[in-house]
Image 1 (cartoon, one colour):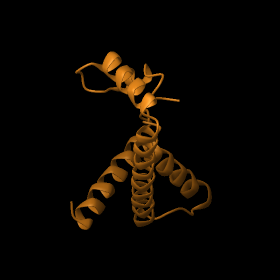
Image 2 (cartoon, rainbow, N blue to C red):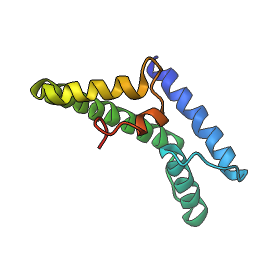
Image 3 (tube, helix red, strand yellow):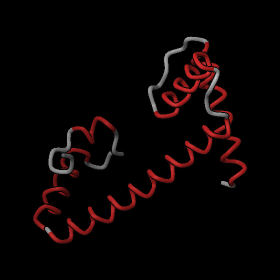
Length: 117
């Protein structure tokens, strides 16, 4: 996806979220909702807030930071599983027992005790 496309997608998402919040619809309570709600309150209370461009840049920053964090986590997970093969076996057995051939979902992941803290 091109930079321009990402900006336009984010701009549309922000616009829809603002409209939904102003209409009193239930929010998703995700990072974007929190950011948009906070910005709306700041604009109403102090006539100061972030521009749409600022919100877009914040979204991009969190996305990139999340990617970096996730990649580091995955590398360390692989290092530790390679270093401790007994835990690797336990984790594998648990995943196969709990999830089987099904696609992982939140419910299944919540049932993992060895893999999750």
